[in-house]
Amino acid sequence: MIICRKKWLDAATAAAAAVLVAATLAGCASQKEVLVPKDASVPPGMDLSGRWALQEDFADMQRRISRAIRQTDGIDDGRVMRGIAEPPSGRRSGRRGVGGLVHVFLENAPSLKITQTDAGLFISFDRSVVEEYRFGEARTVRVGGAVAQRVSGWEGDQYVIETLDEEGMKLTERYRLADSDRRLTREIVLRSNELEEVTIVQTFRREVG
Image (cartoon, rainbow, N blue to C red; front, top):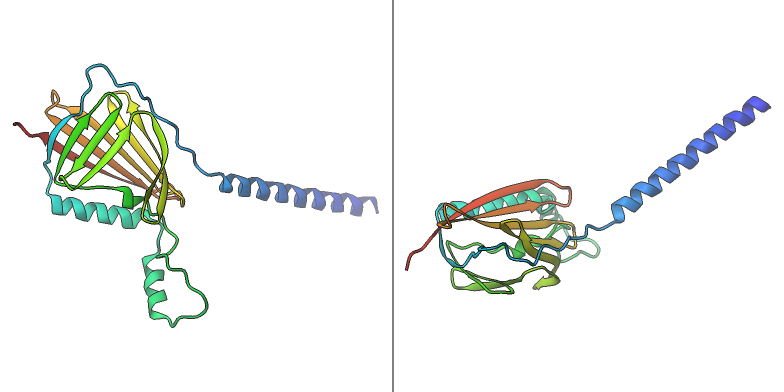
């Protein structure tokens, strides 16, 4: 009887430990990422202002960005196609899968115009879309039905913009000067909610006049 009781206690202890581990993992999974605000102080002598022309082929860049979005948006395209082929049954969601939508906040253009003020940046993408970023900002941004959290500011000599959507997909953009301020690089990082990343680097040359 004593041996049987000991075995029962061991089994009960193991079961309790398993429940505790499961609860801990569930709690960790439920915790949402919080973006850390960036520095609002402009590095001495740093000014991104100017007109900038993309050096890479724009059409190829568009294709690379589209491919990066497909790799990180968390949507099973095969499942979506199967769903289209199947007859409707029950209630269906109007959303295309359950992937992230942070890519709708990403702008791309063959030319940029950047205006830097004491408080922030205005970036004009091919004169059609103007985005405003305030140094040290932390706010909610919306495009249509997509909602995301955004922080932006300085990390050393680069300006960093992070946008995180409700599904955990993250967009990071980094702007920095090089070649005695004649060249501007823009690094775009798309990250899935499974922490898979795709990085694209764009190079711009300063337009004179």
